[in-house]
Length: 216
Image (cartoon, rainbow, N blue to C red):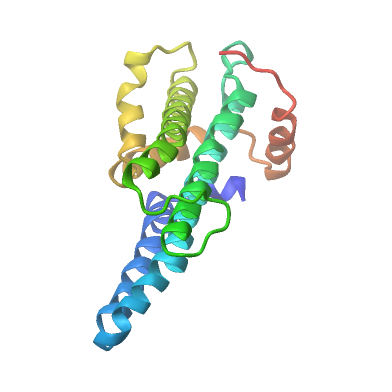
């Protein structure tokens, strides 16, 4: 799975990350528009409660899996003294997933299906105050993840220590991923060709990376 994601073409990654979730989202709305008027509200609640959470979690999970694969696998093409802190990267990369689950809990609460979100009683200020700290943590986790991946790609490409100004273009390409994926993935494909050709060896290296203590 790791190898397939890094060796996949840009259009394949684009299809997995964006075409599939967007298709599910728009098709579900197509059924909503085509339904009788008295069912519209019921189907809208169904879409918000079930379809939207599935689409959001699918997108976040796929995106984080791709980020994690690139961020970890490309470390093996970087000199040991330049490798980044994998453990910190793996901690921050899962914060958006936790936030996504919490946010879906809030949506469930607002639609009358409460699992683990607190009781808001549809009070806007209360909702904002509960979500804000989680949103800020998730935002930091996303920015840290994007910068880590951008720095990893640039370091693997140049084979030397890189600075923020050298990563800024790659950073924004990753941030605006629907467009950036067409430029980033071909670069990853070129870098991955210098890694060992044996998938067994690469998978073994990936397991070893979990125990490595790389420093920035």
